Length: 163
Image 1 (cartoon, rainbow, N blue to C red):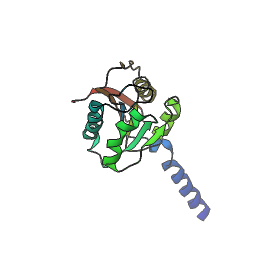
Image 2: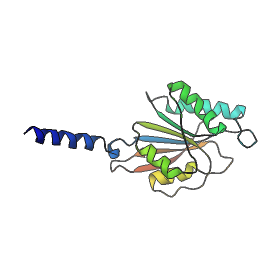
Image 3: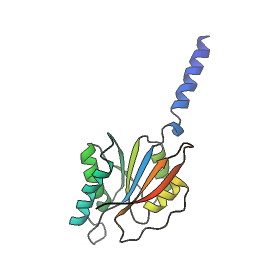
Image 4: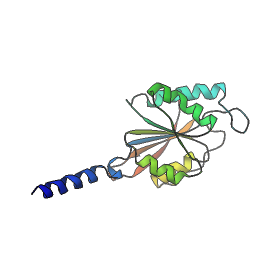
């Protein structure tokens, strides 16, 4: 009898730890804020102000998980969020969005990703299985909010910042 209980307990633990049970409820996908010129630029003054504004979009949550590509402009955009939530920013390889998708789906709660004009729409499409239009290089005021549906899939909505 005890081996039956032990087997049931192991099955329950494996079921609860399955990635389908730990996928995030919401994902916020932002492209980095306005940048200076150069090969690996930091943010402009306007970009820094927008990065600080992002906190107001997610400060209703007690905790987030934060991802950023490993560039000055994305890390600088993520910095106010990391400071507000007192968390570390997890860096990812912007050239491997499939690996990033798998990392994101292993999280729970609310996940924020800071990316680029050419990767943020692609990531939204990968996560939602929706056709997503490209983002203009000069567009900094839009972001994607992905909500988890009852069937476990995500619906992506393009949102505009009131900034």
